[in-house]
Image (cartoon, rainbow, N blue to C red; front, top):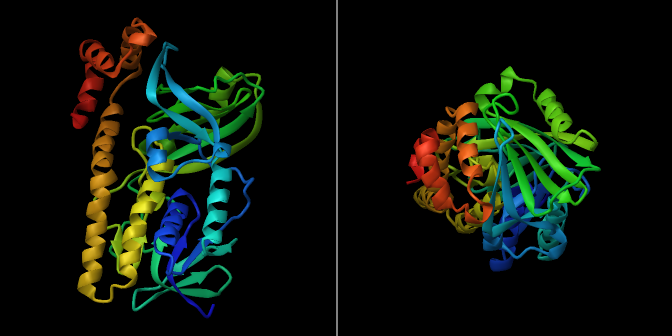
Length: 386
């Protein structure tokens, strides 16, 4: 297009937008182009839209218009329908993710980013002094550094020594359901081998009369089940009178192998490098943190020309990611794998024991002590966090 950009960011999701925002605020002279395949702020994003309050505020202060509700309770439903409610003092948010991303994109443009929307990147060239991004319309862009924030199915850099394909890619299917009664301060999780093998089902409030309700299935089991039928069964059982506004599919990258996440003039962040929490499958705040961290190293890489300096920056970025998110990520991935061995009978036994404890006394320490005697497999699964 006749211009060489300092940094090209592929993907205007939480990771890409937070990366662009960070660069534009703290490194104003750098030129940034933000490339996104869609611009429709009303387009439904396959997401339950729940975020932890602490992690979100660590990156930026949310606008009130982004927050659908403040959540303080988690209700876990065992296979036999025993329900346990835990209150988290740190709280969380149910957000309007589409509106948040639209507002952040507008802010980035106001800060000086070039926006190239309704376009996809077909390929990224091998590195020299710059990289060439080939677009779906046949045009190309030159950039000194490319940030890949394009999501879990990204193939950018697949033929280079850098992470590309998630090792643990789960399937999720969910619906926006209206005409139901919803507690706006509570999220609901449902476990069971029949309901959601290798995963769980969920219902997150959108407002007092609608929810995001869905099912996710473990990677090893996704080819053995019909996830649409699982969702239909879940909705008929728990929201029989609800009106389904729309249903959406998505992929959740739950685990990243310990492999490079940056190479010469190419840095990956967010779902493109599997930053999702392997247990909760939450990924918004994780992607925002990842994009913000990646932005710091992208800036340094702009002015790095020697092979040695480039390799050092790539290695430093991976170490920084591991310290901030990766170390916890790998431990949680081990816990997740251990939880696959917990049967419905054991979930029921543990839930029944915990249900006997008054809700205002249900602390994490009491949950642990109770499970130690009644639910030993859960304690064994959590050993990786000790």
